[in-house]
Image (tube, rainbow, N blue to C red; front, side, top):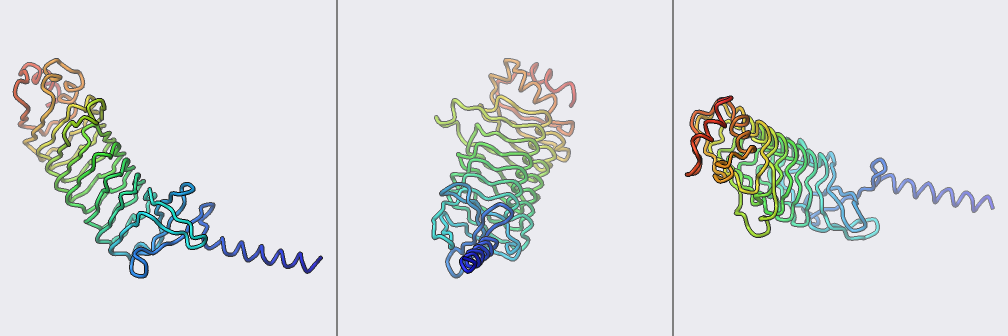
Length: 292
């Protein structure tokens, strides 16, 4: 009886030892190398029975080129998972990184995932839906193209990107969170056409979304944006010419959103404003007289 007890306790100790290698707190993790034998060995944590997310590991700080696979295999039980998320702080502060390839299976890029990361080549894959707070803060990317399935950009997601030159957002009904692009250096922001899949949807440009964007010269305001938050384009103090294009019918009708937009959000540094033909001068003067 004692022999069996000691045998059982021995097995239990070995089992606990094995699991200690793959548990981070209460979270199960495993590593997978892609491409096999040559690629980066990344760490993954299950989200469900068949999905995982990439999670942080200290070894990432030395990586240069990263390609995240669509599917990974847990070496412990050979179970195959689909990679659907890039976890919080996964690649934050990776200052040796040059490029990152994101697979089409990714749906969410979580908080600080690429914040202060040195990679200047990052593709936002076509099935990404949400980019969370600070995900790309201080990123050196030069051009940003967001596919049509992206519906939410959260707080500070692309803030303080000093090398960013242009932004194209395919979804004209997107939610752009507070301070999303604050302090970034792009010159233009464009939106995709109001395709049939977007016509019944509405987006939002939140407060301070483009504040302190000193190089911003042109932005198109799509018809799907009935709500523009306070100071969304404020304090672009070094920019004297800013070209806005938006729905003239709503503007001429004295729409409170657009009136508030002109009066509160542009800021006092604006010297010249170009808008579409047909906008009534009386509406413009009423809208901007208070603060400009």
